[in-house]
Image 1 (cartoon, rainbow, N blue to C red):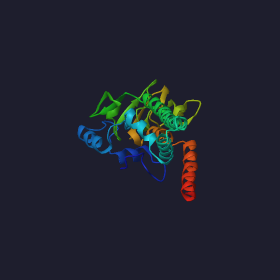
Image 2 (cartoon, rainbow, N blue to C red):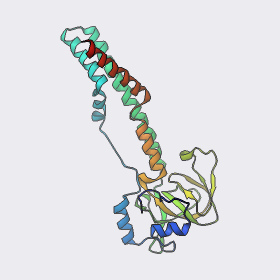
Image 3 (cartoon, helix red, strand yellow):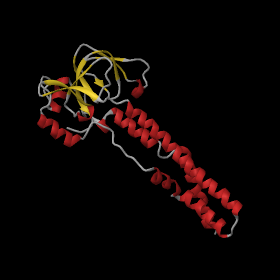
Image 4 (cartoon, helix red, strand yellow):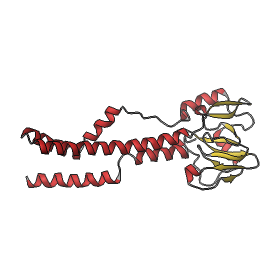
Length: 244
C-alpha cells in the first residue's frame, strides 16, 4: 500500500479500497494498526520548515548577482568613491528586500492554506466512535462527515445517501459538489449538506491539499523575474570576463 492516494488502473470499488487498506468498516482500526500506520505514514499534518529571519535574509546576499554587486561595492570602497558606493549598496539591499518580500508573501499564502485544515475528526476505532485530533488520522481510518465539518484528510465515501462539499479552495469550482458513495472527498474542503461515512486514503503531504501547499511553497522560491535577472546577470559576468 502506497503512502499516497491508492494507485490503480481503473476506478476501484468501495470493497476493493477497504480490502487494500485492510480496514473493517464496522469496527475501524485497532490500536496496533493505528500505531503501525502512524510510524509508516507519519502525522496527518503538513511539514513545517521554519527559517530564522537572519538566515533567510543572508541567502539573498549569496549568488552570482549579489557577488557582482558586492565586488563593485568593494572596489568603490577601496577607491573611496562614496557616491558610487552608496548607489551600489542601495541596489544590493533592494535586490535582497525584493526576494525577501516575495518569499514572505508565499509563506503567508501557505499559512492561510494550513489554517483551513480540520483540527478534530470523528473516527471509528475498536468498534467505538470517538473524537480525536485530526493529526492522528491514518490511511484506513473510518470517519464520519457532518454538515459544517472540514474534511480532515483525503477519503473515499463508503456509506450514506449523499453529501454536498465545497471544494472551491482546492479546485476553483464556484458551487458545492454533490457526491455519493464511491466518490472522493479532499482534505480542506467543507461539508455543506448531508452526512456520510468515509475511509481515509491519504494523509498529510500526500493529500491533494498537501500537494497544492507544496506547489505554493515551491512557486514562491524563485520568480520568473528573478530567473530573468539571473540570466542577464550571468551573461554580463561572462561577457565582462571575456573582455578582461
